Amino acid sequence: MQYDFDTPVERRRTGSLKWDVGENELPMWVADMDFKTAPEIVDALRRRTEIGAYGYSIVPNEWYEAIGDWWEKRHHFRLEKDWLLFSTGVVPTLSSAVRKLTTPAEHVVIQTPVYNIFYNCIQNNGRTVLENPLKYENGRYEMDFSDLEEKLKDPQTTLMILCNPQNPAGKIWERDTLARVGELCARYHVTVIADEIHCDLTAPGKEYIPFASVSELCRDNSVTCIAPTKTFNLAGLQTSAISVPNPNLRHKVNRGINTDEVAEPNFFAVTAAVAAFREGAPWLDALRDYLQKNREIVVDFIGRELPGIHLVWSDATYLLWLDCGAITKDSKELAGFIRQKTGLYLSDGAQYGGNGAQFLRLNIACPAIVLKEGLARLKQGVVQYQM
Image (cartoon, rainbow, N blue to C red; front, side, top):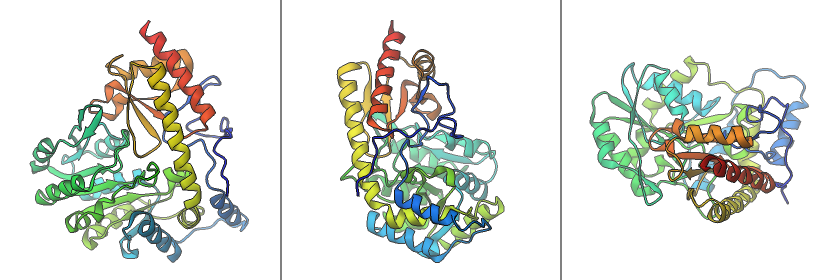
């Protein structure tokens, strides 16, 4: 089947968070795609809608099977039925797990720059963020294990949130790197929550490695958060899963999400997830090819038109991390200036911590014609900023 990623989808005045902007503004910030989801998912939701009675829903056996089969086939690691829990979203899971697996004032390690909502999930629950800044050398990120071990040694540190693949830089962590994280966390009695929501959005020919698949230490000391929402543009349906192989840890997580009332599916959540994992592979493969072409458009444009910006090469996600350090050390100011002057709405990197204050984050999950318009606005804004 041929899938259409070129035709823009009109999302203004639809209650879209991303598109709740001015008429002349072009939003390329939040991680939300401007593509219609797979038609197979739309058809499944349509059939579900036609029932006409929208009562309470259960999590049927097919949900567990669809997830287990998908991970076994796509990622060579089967998520067993007994490991899996339903949750309304990765962020609710993170907040719930932070509350259940730590006590107030304990430290939670995050590796910055990283998804900014991690800060909210930690600080809003009365815990302390402990940053393990990633090393940025020759335009690429690596883990600083010396600093990480110092942070994990602290008796007040009881939890680490790992972003795999990494957002915002799109880094796919290597097996040896993940194994080392697992060994250190087990040594210092620190539980790992692996946010793997972007795992299916890898570049063609690239595969991510599930943290829990690396070793018994990683498997038995971790909670993995997954979802079809980023991959298939389903975030508004509030559907995700948690994989916890360790039964004692799983009991705690299960009690946490049930206490917080985020463990029950809405009427469409299971249907969308099952359709995605059972029928969405061809659409996803076509999407990955399209996103790769969009990456190449950005690489070419920046190389020709914006020599002051360095693109951190990404092997995962549809988010590109633009190093503007030669232009500014205040990306919040730069992002605000570009939006004011051109209408292009990007994410400023400062909110992601670490060295993010010299970066902008660009969402390329849109038709190529829209991406090219965004890049033209980016150039216009940068040129004016430098005048």
